Every structure is written in structure tokens, then in C-alpha cells.
Length: 360
Image (cartoon, rainbow, N blue to C red; front, side):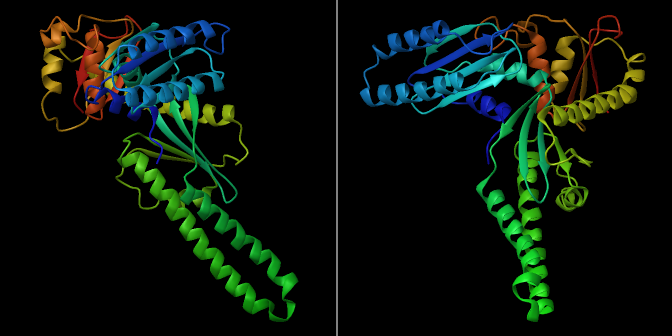
């Protein structure tokens, strides 16, 4: 299965030290849709300076190959209002477009520095989205208000083709074999039913992967009957939402609109459930919240944060050096996400205190 951007960045953050690692953040803002050749040249220049000092020629060759691959990904896509995150080692090549602006930076050393990307991803909702019918399958990764297409797995493509062939066989039976019409029609219908079961089972396996392994909510759209079949047996695997009536030819904007409406509804429900309790909650220091999040919790926490609020990360850790972020809010948000919790940013003045943790 293709991992989501969130998962890939998190894995990079957990990787061991490499012999040589390049991490770059290249923002694309305003009317731009591509990274300028000048900025790409800076990436290559810093990489070559480091490679000139590297003694392992095989690793140098692998690094250059991976760098070429990553930079090619940047030049092949035209996206705006975001940041290209590039991570390259002799064994890793990643170029991911993130739908938020991060500070430009190019660093080369013995460790990747994916934390700015990781913490930015923690602040937005990551969702797996599927749109399917008996004619097509489309997978997306939703980050904030941007949808990124995911590749269709070979087993899904094969199951869909078998279903389409079985359906075509039903249509051809009456024309090709009129004297044995009923017998062959029954055989064709049986083959179609088996192909449909295999198709829905295969779709269910994919959705279960993203719910269980990637641990993200899933939103499925398309044919009502298929949605019910695919959703059967996924109870308890995670947050699953079925939205019927979405045509298979729906535009990306139409799909995105439905996802946004769903996420806004979920947020409104959470606010209605928990916001009234904030008026009766005592003020909590960041250190107290951090301490709670280090323990095993009976339920998924909900963290309310005033927009624009921040404090030094060293308040939580006590360390002044080697911190992956300067903002303590980043650490709290990451800890809540790791616990399977929810993050709700509210406008200034709406919260009794700028930082409040609830345990449902």
C-alpha cells in the first residue's frame, strides 16, 4: 500500500542517522506554481559540496540518483501555496508537497530534519478518501483543504477488471447463445456475483489498511450499495464515514467540497460536545498538560488552543539545546495526535484560557 505523506514524514523523523542526509524546505507562494531553478540550484550546490567530502563512491552515486529523482518530482508538478519538503539520503528519496507555507531551509548533515514538516502535519487533519463504483476507483489523501491522488493498487485494478468483464458477459449471453440463454445467463450472473464479492473484499482490505495501519479517518463516497458492502465488517476499525450519491465522474472540487463539509460537521459536533465544559475547567499550565500526556490515558484527549498562542518548547522538556522545535505547542499537539486525540484551534478571546485539555 502507498503510505500517506504524514506516515512517510513520521518514519523519516524516526530514522537512524545516515552517512549523508539532505533536507530542504522550498516554499511556493503568491502566483508561483513551481520552485524556481535558482532554488533548485541551491539544493544541488549544497549537496555537491557535501558529496565532495564523502569518501564512499557507491553512496555518493546512490545519493545523486535519489536527489535527481526527488528534484524531478518537484519539477513535474505545479502546485501553489505550500512547501516542497525534500529528504534525501543514499537510501531515501522523498519529495512531498505540503499544503502550508514553511520557512525556507536547506540543510546537509548526517541526520534528516523532518520535524517542521511533521509538526505542521500534526496541526491539520489527515484523511483517507475513496470514491468508487463498478466502473472506477479513486483514492485520495486529504491534508487540510488539499487532496492528493493516491495510486490504485494492482489487486484493486485486477478485481475491478474482473467485475467489468463479468458484467459484460451478462450483457453478451442473450446475443451470443440464444438457444442456451437461461443456462448461460445463470452462469454469467453467478460469475458476476463472485466477482462483485471479490471486488468489495479487496476495497475493504485497502480501507482497513488506512484505518488500522495508517491510523487516519476514512471518508468513502460513491454507489450506495457498494458503500454498504465495503463498510460491512469495518466497525471498530476507526473513524469511517460513508457518503452515498456522489457520481463516479465527480470533479476534484466536488469531492473536496464534500470532505470539507464532513470535517466542518465533525468539528462542530466536537465543539458542541466539549466547549460547554471549558467554562468549568480550571486553568492548566503547559507543564501539567505535558505531564498528563506522558501517561496512559483512558480515552483520547481533546486539546483546545487559542490561535496564535505559543510558548518556548524548553518549558516542557527543560532542555535548551537539541530541541526539534522551538514552539511548545508543537510538542503538545504531537503528543495529543499520538494518543489518537483531537486538536481544536479557536479564535482569540473564545477560550477561558489559551490552552485547555479535556479528557472525555
